[in-house]
Image (cartoon, rainbow, N blue to C red; front, side, top):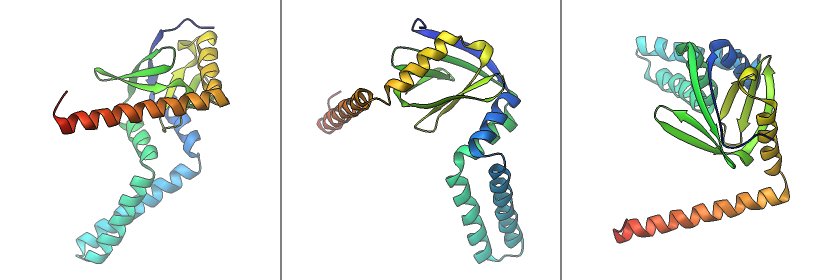
Length: 188
């Protein structure tokens, strides 16, 4: 088993991010959604040029709704398009995985991992129940580290793991309630 905590730093190319992203969303489904979105946008612009406000509202609303509905798909595609190389810094601790975003580390609970797969050769893709997706090149992570992540994911699927998640949620709710009470009282 891997020793925790451990850190992994690596770079991801466009290809290492694009192929898993397309496989998650569906290789045939993604172009369909993108073309439909572009059609709605073009129709909204055409209606705007002809000052047909009902058409602008309908097609603009459909484009906006599609974007909101598939925001993960579009954000991932925009990331691949706009950022040639993504530098990653991941820290894995006993129960959490932290991703460095700018100067702040964002954390995911390991028991919330739903999938660890190689969706393209040489890249492991970790999916979390909240929609977060992390790609790790196979040469950047050891078999022991992968085994640790898989074991944590499996613990989250056991009755004890589910109970631990419920208890953690209760503790967070209590802390949130205490914070709201302190905010009303004006105390830190």
